[in-house]
Length: 317
Image (cartoon, rainbow, N blue to C red; front, side):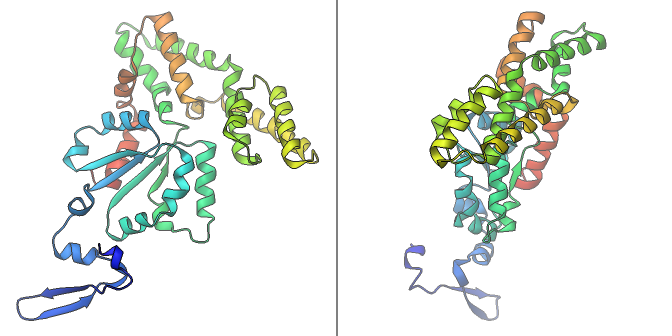
């Protein structure tokens, strides 16, 4: 109601210290001091003390399990915003300015994929960019939430918990098997390469065109299809050679990174987790549900660091 009359209404805050009254105008609809004087918490007028925004339903399920009772204890809501294409809307939304002014705690957790990195950078490059608001946006240290469930640390925990007689040599052997499993599948490096290329250098393409390109089984097939799309949209093929050359450079860089011990951070986490689950079941009789993977994740250092960051940001603990 106040917002509906914002152009006409004047609002004043009246304080009395026991001796005299003080009347002050409320400027720019900033009710922070008013709410504090009334001893109101954010939950009294925003229905929660804090909000954690995550990318989708699986992320929602994961963080509910990882954060547990502290969510209810401190009245924090987890809200999925379903898709990185909405990030610009959230980052520029006036409601976030209101949240910040009223000391309302909120936090956006985003996959560290090429699309999110590009969007965050473009928002920061905006002349109207509010640095304080962007402090509430955090890129995960991994490509997507499932990557936390495929780290070498969690694999060791899974083996030790499910194969109690396993030795360190057994663990090293199984870990090497899983590493070789990923290295032997060239489609993982191709998927990362294609996504990075499209998010960094692509012309505007449709959702179907993008998915069609991502499904290509080789660099050559991708180049051919991308060249056709480029030529149709730009009526020219003048720069396509330099772009496809860059594709080769990206692909070689990705293959090099996949040979490192930290390669688990950049892999397509959803697909690798599914492949790990099947391999462990078929070859080592370890049967794990997604919920069990999630619970094991709580025992790893990367997840502990993330939860600590969320607690500190939202004052959950």
